[in-house]
Image 1 (cartoon, rainbow, N blue to C red):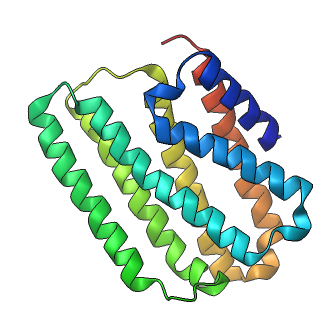
Image 2 (image 1 turned 45 degrees about the vertical axis):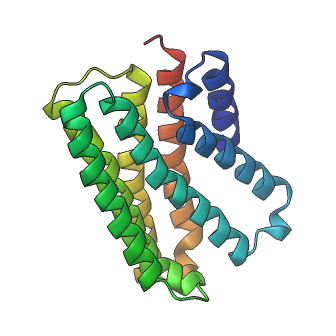
Length: 200
């Protein structure tokens, strides 16, 4: 289901020229579709190292996406844009520094469950900050741009709980927890497909 939804989303983004609304989000969707296909067709190669690489790419795109959305949204509003760039840039810089300092050199699954909730929480705060400024200053944004934030923030909250539950219950519970994460992800992917299909 996830592969199908992501494939449809990629098609709509490029056919309806909505990929330009957030380039890094479009790259994220393409990367997610590619990784999901590789996992489905070559599960024997899906090692812990591959998982860590995948998650690192996703996390990098998440922070970049926050910056891009802020720059695109507030570009025409110079006073707000300066404040948003400074505040969001500082948040991303501090988050990145904390991640680099706190993550051990030989990161593994144990490190992942300890540090990933903090990384995801920083991403949530960055996206939520952009959303809050949009609402506070009543800035008009395209419907799909708003949908990116409204879909991604709740999913990231579910993902944080998912990782926290793995930490608390152990890796033996991952099969059941994977279902929870997959359902949440499919729900947000379906919402993005619906929003991308609609006209702004």
